[in-house]
Length: 326
Image (tube, rainbow, N blue to C red):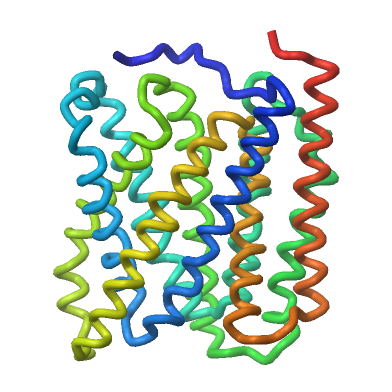
């Protein structure tokens, strides 16, 4: 059964929904931040191999979990839903992770973090055009804090010495911008699909995306075999398998489920701000991995992220009081 296009974007109906939505967003960010540790744990493997390992495991787990409800889901699934699943899986998972990993490898973590740090700005600006959304002018303080946090995160990339040639830096920047565009399209499209397809639970929607993403990862295996010339021993493959399964369960299954739940509780303009928590937790995990304290720009970035979310939440609360939902 296909719902009509008259469904309205979610609004903040009460404090409880807002609190649950924000908690889900923080939880998703905490789990997604673990993705940045995976390349450090299995440095012997390429970004393409990491992508295949993570999403093949995601697809297999999703297939096992969704099998009992497969017939009932297919019976009510319109053709448009499968088209949405294909492009969302590509934009939010396969293509995004390949571009992100390549950007980090070529241009460095700091530069990539700076570019990806503008995700909340892009999503919030797009979300402000939705009917009933908080006007963009009321979100200016939040967007300024968000931009300031992104600049702080990438400050050391500009202040420090270059890690490669100009050509490599440009290539890395192009990959990072591609990842930014890819995940922005996913965040907006996924939130709107969840509103429209109210017959599918956020958990089942996540599993369906996992099933499609796993299928896409199979298509990448010939490329990994053709371009992967490094041999690996059995211990390295075992560690690679454990990391792939761990990332699939924690980040793709649990993290995406929390994100989808949040996307149904919060308006798109507030959903965009929740993306910042992935960057914050990635930084925190990095500090623990490197066994060091954050630098001054990193502390400033974390403070800016907190201020961005709080000012965005305050704007939504004022908007809900002035213009209560019908």
